[in-house]
Image (cartoon, rainbow, N blue to C red; front, side):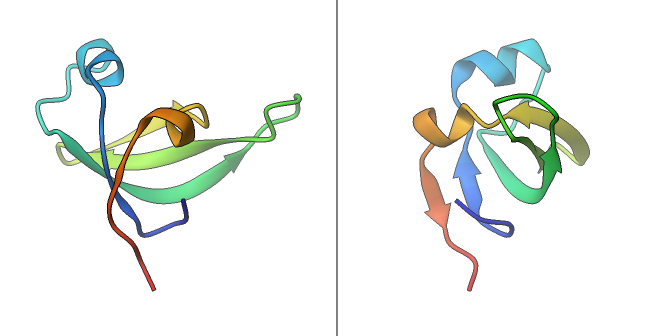
Length: 66
């Protein structure tokens, strides 16, 4: 996954953040100071939301950026 990719969002983050869209755009990697290295800033429902990098294991890429 890389910045600019359009991904699906699973039920968990959609429910937690009250997101109605089933897709999100990866905007930026947000650095962390622990072993997880980074989180993702995504754009969904016209909002910027920080999601853990675990989404890389559970979400599907719909459209890859070049």
